[in-house]
Length: 593
Image (cartoon, rainbow, N blue to C red; front, side):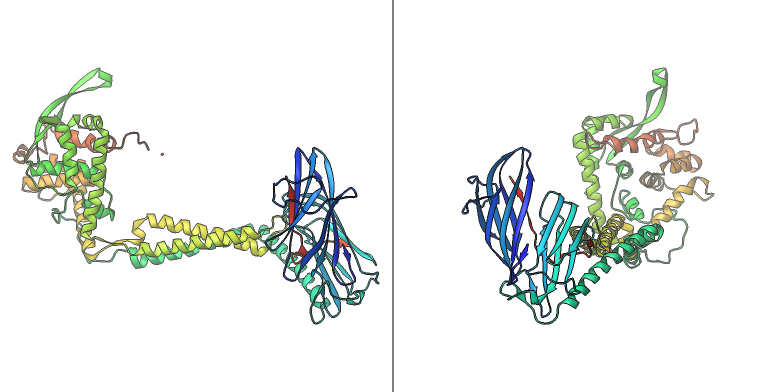
């Protein structure tokens, strides 16, 4: 670079390309800021000037030995054409740069990016020289800086020029040479920008500040690495604290169940006529039904007469067929088909009807029969579960306003994470990280972990949903009834006096998954007269605890339904450089094709 007496710069770049393969074109893009311009562009190679007027389209064809210049967004593009194959070639690009130098009352500031940050390849060696308009003494008003500090380089100040050398410049890394000299060295300011006031003090203060910022960033990053325990604790607080606070607030306001004053330990009879498929989800504060609810619905339909059950005996082989034994079983046949069914009971009836056909079927054969038409029956099972959820919604047992608050929190944290990570990563310097970029990225990660925690909390409905007053009162009574069924075999209380109540015990015991406890209670407390009238309870004369048709059915049926009704195919799984730089003009980058 040669600084002209009017403040403009005559720039000559010599760029050596090491070609591997065949190439025919190259480009040099130079950005321009307000008040800056470039003219007198020329391209040459080995003392031979290229002809102007060539095609400037990247990747386009042009006659070797020609070049062209085009305006691009916020800059100019120089394109030249040649023929090269597996060789090294050096091209010279020359131009006049006007408006880059800034003339203050006391000094002239020339800050040029001698290597731009748009180059996709690294640079092994960079040398630059900026010649003054005329020689001057090495006074405090003549200063030279190279930047940024993390680039390996040196600068030198001579009476007539400033020199810069750098090595191993990474890809997309700029290098700046900044020279400040007395304004009296210029004859005019026609090629420079003029600013009123003194500039030397502000320029020096800016460079010192940039250097201090770099040192400050490095010290803070080193301090964070030296105290990893403290840093991890702070990140944990930032990454989980806000989310946990919001989750706790949502639970306190929206999820915590309200007291009803109910204090009984046991309910000795079903507290309401709520269907057995709906009771366990209510007690769990859930909407999901499964195989227990499906099996309980089947036995409830038997109890109500939709199907008829007759005790029979089935031979079962054990020990790999070496032994055979007779086990109690139930023969199911169609009953009163005019019985009114709830919406969620209809899919259950369709599954059982498909198994029974026109005649009947033994309960021990149900699993194989259902698996024989798994595709249709799995759809019916899915319909059953969906309709149970709809029936629960219709009863308005739950209040779920808290999920909206969690949703807003998730959205806010996700947006914050995206913005912070984009800002931090976009400005991150791997070779010399800024503390602000590190903090921004860390906050973005913390925002992401907060969002993840809120998503996890949103999946736990008890955090943001609670029962209504009526729903909570009914759930507490059903929970007391479940405790009674669980403790029923050992309680020394008067047993139920009616067959209907005994059968309801069993149906709800199946729904709760504690049918065996009810069967044990029946063995101990049920009179012979009552069990002789029931087709749900069949207690054999041997008196074995839990034996009989019901024991066989419930022992396998519920889990068997769960697997048999699963969808087909489903399974479970002058010194050195200083400061950060960044204020220089020019730079840009280029490439070849």
